[in-house]
Image (cartoon, rainbow, N blue to C red; front, side):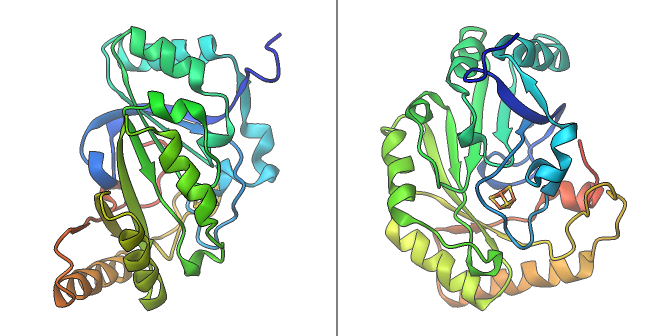
Length: 244
Ligand code: SF4
């Protein structure tokens, strides 16, 4: 039996597919989505990895078992592994990074920046995605600072901000101003996220694309020339479908 402190709570492992958003967009990737999150964003698009009602779908896995699955999916060829959630920072992932790096794999982790871990310094890419006001969550900037510090300048770090409305855009500008050295990626929010168990729920693509256009207008009007505006590629390709 796996010791509780080393077991990793996993919601799903899938791939390879392409990374759909942010600085690694388009890159072939295997995804490890952990279960459980210390946030509950109003528009969360992965509730099945957050809400404890879906706990029965989650699996406690040893580092070894998880790693075997990643290797099988990638056919043993080193690939980028994306650690997402939920909040993957609440899981014990340090040993997984050691294991994968020994075999030539690379790791990117995305988190809202609420929990810092020493092993952030062992990542290849750390995507920090603070949640704007429309999420109905409040950012603890001291905790966020601790995440940046935990990385000790070793992985590439990027800020990724989801924007739904004016207040989110203002928040994104503030977040970018706090961390002027970090590259900024903006993406329009999906206001029609999947309902757990109903991945075929229709997506308001026109609405998402209108928000994307608006975001481009805001950024160019403000001469915010360091920001990159990207769609969620997987949403364009597959809507709300899971595991792609
Ligand atoms: S931080 Fe991410 S996974 Fe957690 S509730 Fe918010 S959107 Fe969902």
